[in-house]
Length: 295
Image (cartoon, rainbow, N blue to C red; front, side):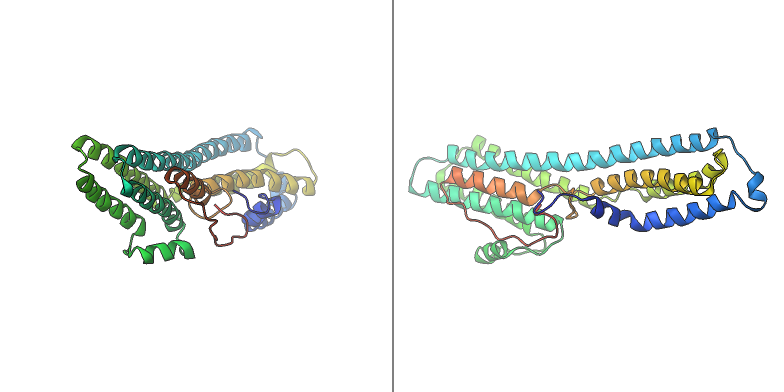
């Protein structure tokens, strides 16, 4: 969710500014050489740079498609977290018999599940936990290297205690454990996406083909104006670079970028939903400020 402003053109240009400088310098050299010395007499068929451009377009299409699939998978996983969070609290409210402690138990699980969503998002971005989350973990004495997993372990321990206290049958326990397992699976999928590096060979090959394309393009143009050739040899590769940079932005959905999966916003939605289900007031959380967005 964008906080103050959209993703401006200047933001995007800053991401590719050094690529633009390198492309312009290289295109200027090649375009100039095409009009001097023995390079002036060299001419290639326009079909050769066209073939190179077609091959480059195919690679970029594949790269963009794969990057979008990673981004979309991350969004699907967090959509599942929303559903399973609601399901967990609904199951507890449905399965526990009516008594004075029922509301307390539901509220404990609702608060802990909300904190788990926040903790998972901040861990995936490798950011420090906000004060409200750190205070909750300290108050509940939840420690460990992997705090989201520790929160789920506390879920499991309390579900076992609740099952014994309320004498829940085995079928109910299995349903609760299945929901908890789905949350664990979702956490593992997020970590897999986060820790799986997109093969660098694609970027290396794309950049190599872009410079090959820039090298042969001026010799395939019929225009005798060096400035026009330099402009064309700069503009077209810049479009390819822009497409590749778009793919790079999407391929890592947990890196605190404007194109990220909106984990904090989703966690806030989950918190409001669970608080309503558990009869709790919704408190406004103070989030760390970012240059562009609260995700």
